Length: 486
Image 1: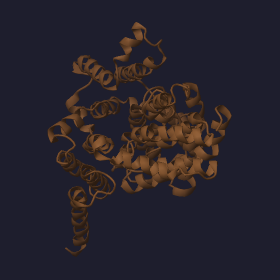
Image 2: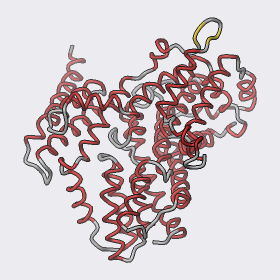
Image 3: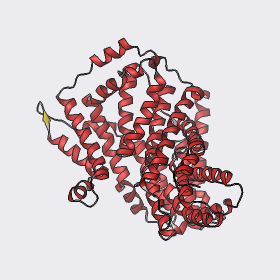
Image 4: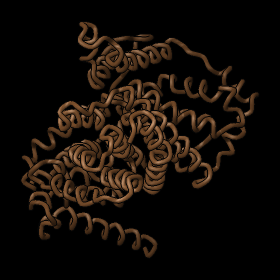
């Protein structure tokens, strides 16, 4: 009894703190924001605390309900909008799809094919870097969300094949890096997320005189993000120092044995075809001529539509009298911790950014006071660090939209290039994965309690953000200077 009392006491303490933050913060004097903003801030802090020290499901449920009593919106509408959001719907369907891929055996085939590459023989850190950079590239070409899910699914099969188990350090930090790569893939895309909104905002505030080209963003962001993942690989090796003995013993003979085990039957070929079709549906709208009839047609296949269409066709097809895809069976792979986390984080992030909360104005005032003269390189470095820290708790699009007018005004008074300044800011806002609230893809690291765990997710996320800042300063600043000037 004495052994269980301490954990019970700690759990009760965490629950009490959760309720005090969630429902008590609104009673405090407003700290430069509106009373509604204080209530929303309490929901956010309670949600973050609950995810960190309690769990994901019931804290998310209560925070969704609590948000409906802050004055932001009706509780029913909040819950309805949360579960109708494309990111939540896609996650439900893609988890079922990745379970199908695993049951079909295609994940096992892909894992064996990846493991059996000769370049990895005796080079586990080359393998690690290859997985992370590969996830980044796939996420850039397609989308960071499905890329992270699909690569993670392959890695689970790989870990099983070489005897690595849940709870070990190497799988945990590698999977955390995969989720980071998924987040960073958005930072490389001029047509997505904070980059798209920021480019548009800069053009508007400058009257069209400050224009950022897509090629410039890619040419600067891609090397910085690749360098971030390579540096994170070194962090895993020299800071976390996990046991990689089973990877280090991948001899050529063993790799040949793995390769000989690769055999694709009818079910595996169908699964591979479905996977390729999904990737094509995600990729084609980015390369087809804009405005053409075929581009408009394929443009209708967003992540949710494409996944539902593929699952529908797979359910229709039969092999040996059975449906290729059975949703009831594959629904066992739907992780409801992930679903509840995403469902709660989306409306809470939107509430933090709404005008009625006053948080955006307060953040803008902080940015203005922060940007007070000083050495230009020191200022840019401090600005990037500040933006990155704030993005761990606030949606990056909100940060970007607040910061762009400030960047334009500072550039006019200090003689800076607003284009280069903005690109650096986009990168800083895009490398957000140190907390569960930082990004939807990065949050998967915290939700994956079986393989990663909260403690490792925080360690990996914080170290990953530090490596990103180092690469932005060491490589991003020179690249911006070369391509557009400072």
